[in-house]
Every structure is written in structure tokens, then in C-alpha cells.
Amino acid sequence: MTTATLQAAPQPRPLTKPTYLADGKTIRSWLLTTDHKRIAILYMISITLFFFIGGAAATMMRLELLTPQGDLVTSETYNKLFTIHGVVMVWFFLIPSIPTVLGNFLVPLMIGARDVAFPKLNLASWYLFMAGGAFAVFSIITGGVDTGWTFYTPYSSTYANGHVIAMATGIFIAGFGSIATGLNFIVTIHKMRAPGLTWFRLPMFIWTIYTTSLILVLATPVLAITLTLMALERAFGVGIFNPAMGGDPLLFQHLFWFYSHPAVYIMILPGMGVVSELIPCFARKQMFGYRFVAYATVAIGVFGFLVWGHHMFVSSQSIYAGMIFSILSFAVSVPSAIKVFNWTATLYKGSIRFQTPMLYALGFVGLFTIGGLTGLFLACLAVDVHVHDTYFVIAHFHYIMVGGMVMGYLGGLHFWWPKITGRLYPERLAKLSAVTIFLGFNLTFFPQFILGYLGMPRRYPVYAPEFQVLNVFSTAGASILAVGYVLPLAYLLWSLRWGRVAGPNPWQATGLEWTTSSPPPTDNFEKTPIVTEGPYAYDAQAAEAELEAGHA
Picture 1 (cartoon, one colour):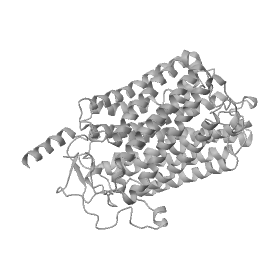
Picture 2 (spheres, one colour):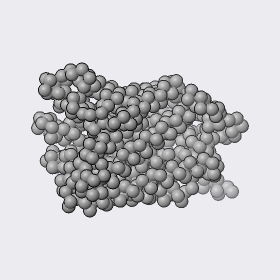
Picture 3 (cartoon, one colour):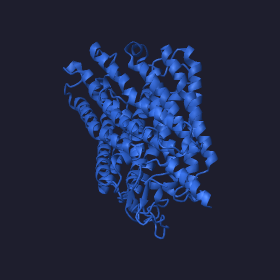
Picture 4 (cartoon, one colour):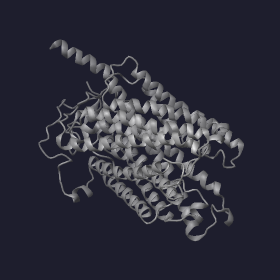
């Protein structure tokens, strides 16, 4: 039994006419498409390209840090490398990946709609994303930017080398694409849900996409304004942030982090939504405390706007403001902890199947928990003063973003790949990749907690010789991690031609997306679904299977 019954209970229709994958094979048909599924695939291809650009910059950084001396690249080039890595990974991979790829593909399917509310705006958002990416790539290939991904003033607005305005323009344009995507999802979820699909029958992935969309719409304009002001100061000498011209550099940090801390939840909330789909499916259990998880999702979105000041404990911020932000930073960990508790409780006494998506989900829970716990150290004023701007911060950020969000993205991609393509991938190779990524990630970033605690500052190509052993471990882990990331690219592409046919529901999962064919027809459903029960009816599903087996 699934979460819904279709009118007249039809079986998923055979693909007697071309699907969205085969309908119109010309490039023009793809570039002008308004089908949410094809737009999701366009995004998938785009962010994969940006992922490898950012990964190439990270590879060069880790090779440089293999030895204490700056003997591979110059200090200026190193500054440009970590700027490229940060900008590309944050704005052109981490933020858009799950919402634009999995969100675009799945939101209409999960709520029983034929498409998003504004299909043409959906396509326009991809063009905005690509236009922003083009400006960023132009900035990279014409000399790069050495400001760091945070663009701190007055250096970025007055003294930095390179095409800073071009890079900022790319982020500005891509931000409008994010706003368009968020607006589209909000309207779609509000207005286009299938009959019977009430708010507390929504899959948790929809809850997280909805909350993420609100953050995108509310926070992204602040980043656009901040980068515009920085560009005005750089281009015309307007005294906004530079104290030599009567400006205030701390104002930039307040504006930037007012956006950028909610942006952390833009990246991680959709990953949480993916894990909330995977764990009930592969534990064959109802989600424990569904309403608590839904409320925790919204609470994370709200608290995310209230804690930006913990990035500024050493920036001459008022000690009283620092105390308030510290308390709020501890408070935001509570709804995240609720989610981890509920995932763990869902696993308890479950009939767990360790298939590839589940391995990624379990990896997400473990790495995100480490990242969250180390975040509490950074929320403590006394400790943050010691480890601020060290590799402790780098390790914490990557445990949340890469260990969390990327594991969530890969878990969701493997879970819904049969639905997207109609093909299965080689399971053993996929499991090997998941384990390789988990081990490589920990070998890369766990030593950086120790490096940061011992005082190694970030963003330096030269370091004290006593830090070399831990840096060698970190670079070795990065090489293993790179292998783990290349493997899925290889076998997923292989599966498009040689993978076994998946069928409509290879995981025996609940959810409206599994009631239609794989890949789905152009209009998603032959008839409008009618939802009759909650989103994770695995207990009922097991009872029905036992009953059918008894009759057989």
C-alpha cells in the first residue's frame, strides 16, 4: 500500500509514447523545455561541471599543503585557489544542488501535480544560473579573485586584484535564479497539492524544500544588496565599507552573514529532507515523531536568521551582542538534534536494508552529528576566540556541508536515479563508492580539527613543520575522496545505456512519485492522484504484503 490511491487504481501506464527523456532529442528542445524533469536534468549537468571546477581548485590546495613550504604555487595563486573553491562550491553547487535537481524533479511528482506553478519561470531560473556561472568562469579564466569567498571589505572593495566585480555579478545573477526557484516551489506546494494531501501528509522532503524556499526568497536579496554596495565602492569610490572613506567594514560582515548563515540551512535542510525519505524506506518503518520533525524543520529556518553574529565574535562586536548570539547558536542546535534523535528512533528495531542510498543516509547522520557537535564549540565565546580562523572552522564547515549536504545529495540521487532514468546502477560498485567517500572524507577533515585546535591558521600556503604529518593525512584522504566522487559519475553514466530496467518502484517505497512509471511520462500522472493516508505507511505496507503472501 502506498501513500495514495489513484482514481480507478490504474497501474503505471506503459510508455507507449516517448517520455520526457526521448521526446525531442534536439538540443533546441532541451534549451526551450518547460518540463520540470528536463530542467532538473539541465541543472544536474550544470552543477556537476561546477563541482569539478571547485574540486580541481581544492585538489591544487591540498597538493600545496602536502609540504610546509609554499613550493607548488605562489601565495597569490593560493589565495585565488581558495576563492575559486569557495565561490564555486557554495553558490554554484552546494546551494542549488538538491533544490534545483532533486527538488525540480520531485516536488510536482511528490504532491501529485503535473508541473511546477510557473514552468517558464523555472526555465528562466536555469538561464539565470548559467549566466551567473558564465560571469564567475570569466572572472576565473581572466586572472581569478583573491578575496576569499566572503569578499571581506575594505580589501575586496578597494585593494584586491582581479575581476572582483565580475565574480560578484555572477553571484548576484545566480541569486535571482535562486529567488525564482524558491518562489516557484512556494506557490507550487501551496496551490497544486493533490486532493487529500494535507500539510501533515506531506513527505518530509517537501517540508524541507518549502522551508528552504522561504529562506531563499527572504535572505538572497540581502546578499544582492551587499554585493551591489561592495561593487559601488570598488567602482566609484563611494565610502560605504572602507573606513578611510568614512565607511564601516563591520557593516559588510553583518549584511553578509545575515544572508550567509541562513544559507547554511539552504544547503543542509534539503539534505535532511532526503535522509528523512531514505531512513523510513530502508528501515521499513513509519517515521518516528513525524510532526516533531516537521516543526523542527520550520524552527531551523526561523532560528537561522537569528544567529549570524556568531561569525563575528572576534570582530570587535559588543560582548553583550556576542552573548546573545552565543545563546541563540546553542538554541538552533535543538531542532537539529530533534531530527537526529527521530532518525535514530526510526532505525530502532527496523528491518534495515543496507543498500546504497541507506549507506549515504547513515553517513549523513554520523558526519552531520560530528559537524553539529563541533559547532557548539564555535558557539562558545571563549573557545571561538582560540579556534577562530583556524582549520577547526574549516573542518566543522565541511562536516556540515560536504559530510552532510553532499552525502544527502548523493543518497537522494542514488535513491531516485531509477525514477529519473528508468535504469538501475551496479549496486556493489555504488556501495564501494559510498564507503570510499565516507572513509576518504574522515581522513581528509578529521585531522583538521586537531590542526585547528593546535593553532594552524586557515588560508595560508606555508605552515609550521610540526603540522606536516596531519596535513599529509588530510591530502591522502582528499585523494581517496576524489576517487569516491569520480566513481558515481562513471557508473551512473554507464547505467544509462547498460543498466537493468528499474520498473516503477524498485525500492518498494511509499510516495506518489513511485506510483507512476520510471521514467515518468511527460505529464507525470494519467489521472489526478487522491491521497488517503500519511507519507510513510511502511508498517501497513508490510502487513499487506504478509496478507498477500498468506493468500498465495
